[in-house]
Structure formats: structure tokens, C-alpha cells
Length: 433
Image (cartoon, rainbow, N blue to C red; front, side):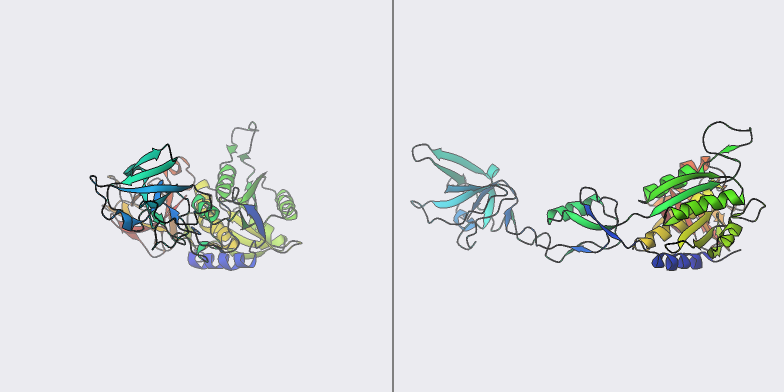
């Protein structure tokens, strides 16, 4: 049947670790989304760096409000105003004619620097006070009509990030929420890995890349657009290098040309099985390539090939995928993507565990058996499926050559080797497209 899937994945990891794209590039946080971090980034500061207000209001002494009621409000004199970005008010004036001081303070503004035991330990929102003004003395006052809690509406220094906190780890793919955190601690540039460069070819003299048909039996190339778009979606720099006819010389020239252009990875679809036109295995041998594996116990995608091709700058990874579109898609997802992820220091992907649901007319892979799906026991099986919340339905019409049923799917179900039956309610592993 071929090499066990788990062994093939291990070999992919070993080869990728030898070829890691280790060059780090500085990248502005404005352009870093979806890039892979080259090294772990920690906060160099604690945030906020000082106590700040969580509300627009007035910083004052909560102790001075203990006797406040609507009938007997407590009055404070406004001795200053602090907005976000201002230096904090630095002195706590003594009582003026028996009136306690307060400082008008805006959201995000620093609290006065005085020891909070002496005052200014909390913020009273502007909505909870009455503001008045003495036009003769040009003084402003507020009246507080209920007790304030100590430290209310006060954000404390270091209450968000502490110096040394990890923000994003090496190998993580930067997302917008990472960028929010990085920006909040003052990071404006991050070291990211160079994007892997991938060349994609479709093979087959029957394939129509563009333009009109030379004869009625030619078919459109479905693999090229799909493989290229998925690789681009996964954050690599990808070039579609065209359709290669079933000719040893033409195919060797195309692959050698890609090697000369310095790609990190070459991906082809078709010509990897055992037919007269399946010339890639022999091509790899003629080029002096080192075949890591050819044929894996998976369905679909059994004839998948993985080799390392020699070049001036070292070896270049080569994946030969099957020609059937759904088989090529499965091999791209479960062989090529793990190689790229390991190449970029990313952790092994963990599947989502969901509950299997069966349709009203339950068809199995080899027939109907009530509400139980049956499978061949030997290979690892990957089936397109539809996920909804915590449930998944496997696509019944699963021919690797049909693209219309694949159109409905949004994930893959992985059925490990050794599992021959799955009933409704079984827990299964799914991977997003």
C-alpha cells in the first residue's frame, strides 16, 4: 500500500528542519500581519507605565466623600486638568477654605503623583458630579453626592503587560490582535521570516492552460489555480510556472529552470503514478534527486512523491502530487503544508475534535450499513466535509476526480489507519481548508 502516513509526516519534518528559512527580516507592524515571527518578542516595558484613569472624571480623595449624600453633597475645588499624554499633576494642594482639591482627569490620563493615602486615590466619573463655577474668583468646583470607592476607575501601572511578558512566540503567524499588543508596548518593527518561494507546475499534455482547445478532448487545468491560490493563502510567495507536456525533455527543462531561479519548494501535479505518462519518478532519478518517499498509505493521494533535488545552493524540496484535483488538494493540505509550517518554525497543527453526523440517506465508502460509515482499514483517509459548529457531515460523493461535491466542503475529516467504522455521534478530527 505504501509508507504509513505517520512515517511520511515524520520524514517531511526531518527534511524541513534541515532546510529552514532562517533569514530574519525587519518588518513594520503596519505590514506584519500574516508574517511568521522569527524570534520570540517580549514586552520591554510594563503597561500602563503609570496609574491612569479609566473614565473621564475627577481624581480626588475617596475618604473625603464618605459623608456625601444628595442632601449634603461634598464640594471639591478643581485645581487642574490632565488629559491623556499630559504630564501628571504633581502637587496635592492643602484644603482651601476647608474645601478639598480634585483634578479633572480624562480617560487614559495619569493620576496625580501624590501618595494616594493623602488624596487622589480614585476617579469619580463626570456623569456623577455637578460642576459649578465662581466667575469672580474664576474657580471651578464639583459636588459629589455619594461616597466613592477607594481606587475606583483607576488603572494601575503594570496592570496590562509586565516587562518580560511574551507577546508573540517564534513561529507564530502574526494576527491583528498581536499587532494591537505590540503597538501598545511601543514595538514598531518585528523580525519576520522570509516567505518561502514556491514554484507550481501542472503536468499533462491533455491540459488546457489558457486560450482555445487544439482539439475537443483537451480539459481545463483545475490544479494550477487551486494549488497556487491555497499556497498564497498560506502566506508563501508562489509562482505558477505553467502546464508541462508529457515529455521527459520538456519536463526536465522546466524543473531545472525553476531550480535555477532559487525556489525553496517545487510542486507539481500529475505524472507520479505508474502509467506510461507518469514520468516524474524517473525524472527525479535522472536529475540526481534523493527520493524521500514515493507512495503513501493514504486515500486519496496514494502516489504522492517527495524528493530533494540537488542544486548549486543545496537541496530543494520537490513534491509530486497526484493529478486528480481532490487528491492533489488533500496531498497539498497534509503533506506540503506541514513541510512549509516546519520550514517556518511553526508548531504541529492540532485538529479540532467534533461530532460526526450522518445524512438521512447514509452511504458508506463501501456500501450502506445503517447509520454507520465504513472505510478501508489500511490507509489514512482524508474526506472533504461540511462543518457546522461542533458537528461535521462527510461529503458522500467523494471521487477524487470530481470537483462539484468538493465545492460544498469547508474542511477535511481525517480518519486514521485502523478505523474501519464510524457511527453518528463519533468524535472525529477535522482540519480547515
